[in-house]
Length: 132
Image (cartoon, one colour):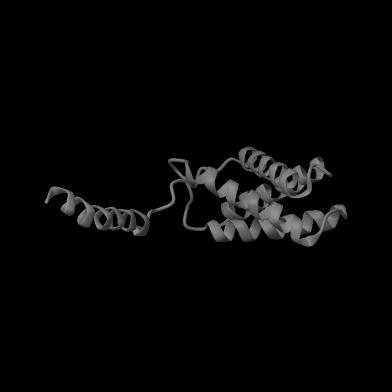
C-alpha cells in the first residue's frame, strides 16, 4: 500500500510544488521601477553617440546603450537612497556594460568606441534622472 501511495501522490506533489515555485511573482532584487525608461534613455544615447562617432550600426549602438542603461539602473537600485546617484559611478558602470556588450556582439572590433557609447548612456541617464 505504501508503494502505491508513493507512486500516486509523489509525482503530483512534485508537479504542484514546482508550479507553485515558478508561478510566484518575485520583485526584482536590484532594479527600481523605471528600468524600461533607463534602457530607453541608454539606447537613445548609444544611437546618438554612435552617430556622432560615425561607427557601428544603429541597432548595435542601441543594444549597447540599452545594456548600459539596464546596468546603471541595477547599480542604482542597490543604493539605500536611490536618489543619491554618483555621476562618475554611472559613467563607469555604463562604460563597462557598453564594453562587455560590444565585445559579445561584435567581437572586440572597436572596444574603445563601445566603452564611449556605454559611458554616454550612463551620463545621459544620470543627467536625466537627477533633473527630475
